[in-house]
Image (cartoon, rainbow, N blue to C red; front, side, top):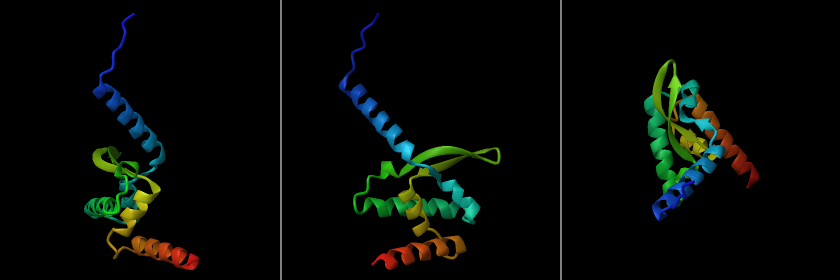
Length: 117
């Protein structure tokens, strides 16, 4: 039987892998799901970039809410992003406001928030 000796780099990789796995358990949405709400791939991509930038400004731990992945849609492989509930909400907050699904969602969020104030 061989003995495995972990270097500091291997230990760090193991911790990072476990952390990514843990975050992945809580990330349940796909950015591509917004295609079914009427957003185009470009609109989704732009909204994801804006949402990540919004999250970075107050120091949000981005890895907990946004994870780049590949997905399959209509027999094509696309570059996608898995989103937590907060990530999904941030994407919708930063999506094209001319779309009714986006406008309705933003109004509901504000009504819920203002109703509690």
